[in-house]
Image (tube, rainbow, N blue to C red; front, side, top):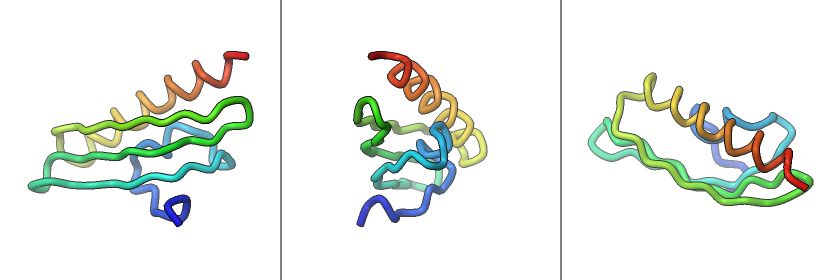
Length: 78
């Protein structure tokens, strides 16, 4: 069920579209954004959780950048 949650521009934007991931987003006081999930690439599953205290447009850039760095690093490991 959590793999069908909307992406909302958070950790899912840093991985390839075909990689399944399950996650739960949250927002507190219209500025703190959070996203925790499990990403399921072929070579290794991993979990990540982020909370950012910025407006959505800025927070989404950080979610994408950090998620992408983690995905690229782990997908290059054997």
